[in-house]
Image (cartoon, rainbow, N blue to C red; front, side):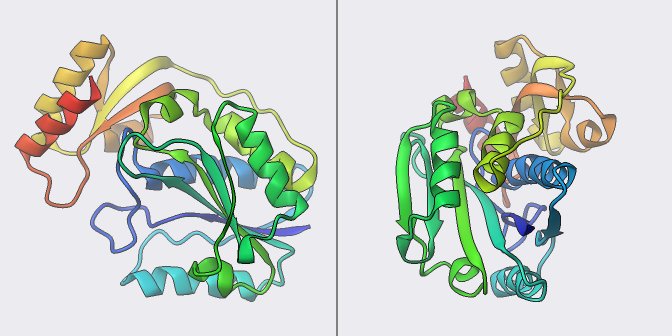
Amino acid sequence: MKIGIDCGHTKYAGSSDYGAVGVRTESDLTREVGNLVISKLKQLGHTVINCTVDTCSSLGDSLGRRVSVANSNNLDFYVSIHFNCFNTQAYGTEVFTYGGKSYKQANDILNNLVALGFRNRGIKDGSELYVINSTNCESMLVEVCFCDNQSDMKIYNAEKVANAIVKGLTGQTVNNEVKVDMKIIVLYFGDMDANAAIYVAQKNQCPMMKKSDFEVSGLKAEKIIQIGGRPGTNRDDSLKDAASLV
């Protein structure tokens, strides 16, 4: 099969299509899962088109480029990976399709994610979503879980989520052991977030590191707690966010 994988939202804070920020940042999570999905699909012999957009000039630019890549490659499936965010209380997994169509692959992905422990929020109508209504193939947008919900984030495991998506698409999966160097780490964006990061790291009795340093370190953690990164964030905001995490 030829499958398009879209790691939802752009990569950098401040962009007009940057993802939600919760216990962890959506834009980081979509790439964490999406890159594993791409790797696993390739290992299974499928052709994968990466429809991800890391930077954009506008929301329309971001969405349009994703769809343009998908439609120029004659895909069998297009899958956009996202993480929900609402009020810290909502939780669970859901899949959006055109007209809420409940076809096999969408159902299988949903059921595989539910089997990991996420609440089943169902197959939903995604007809108003640009990446669903403008792609020329069978398309779905997967909201893995809520990135601002502590319970969902405790269930979340990138390897298992990627396996759930790959198996839902193909009926097969590939298990790749990922070395975990530490159980928990606190990451912070800039110096103004450092005090908040120290506070959270002390409460969790775990190490902390600047996010940019962690990304190039090659280290892996079972759980990442991220501090800062929202546009306009100041030291007081970071401390308030930190207080809500412990």
